[in-house]
Length: 283
Image 1: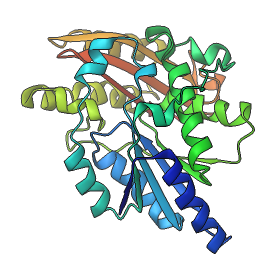
Image 2: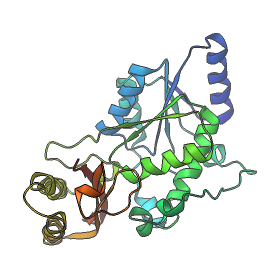
Image 3: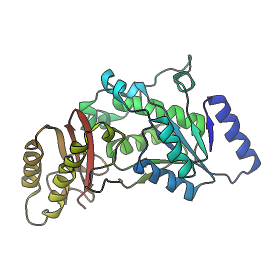
Image 4: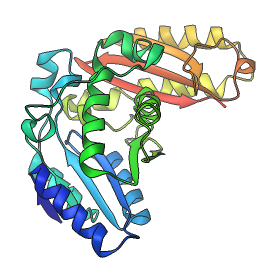
């Protein structure tokens, strides 16, 4: 695996590959590091489908509203490199801030509509503008054919779909199913900040989602949502931010499965001071 830190070196390297073979396809996985099996599944998918797989590790400050959250974000780069090599990633792009946001780079304002301000966006003002700016810059630098994102960050995948449309990009988005711990907890870079006991106990989040899905034929959706909220809130140390049942495309809230062809439950919980998000499809 090649580790490239310079934007110019990466652009030159990818351009050379494309000139040698016009059939080369490039798969791209943007990350902020602290890689886990969820990231590995994205890499595996890209490696199986593309000539070259590029993974970036860049902790993007513009998508953190809380500076303390940015400061606490884990950065185990040596372990990350081991994972990338094991899963046959071709190029690790490890840029400095100036390589992504050069001096003449202007932060753009993307017209994301209500997607930007609802659910996760309501709790994290400016977060999705930060996501769009960094992903757009990385797309401009790498010019991938395919981009791989995990389903765990469900609203983010909807945002990236909008970004691709707004920028008229040729990138094809591939959403890969959520990878989970043995107890059901969605894998996340933030999980490393949980205590060993907390990591085990945090399985209550996925249990609440599964209970909604398992009882959907016998109880009303409104009743199931209220029960799930009460269950999560009853867990010691758990602070429920939201639990919403929405249309999978528009993210508009629904109160019945009849209102939408595809329905997904989105949840965010702060547990042991760590923000954890998850989702599950009901249809």
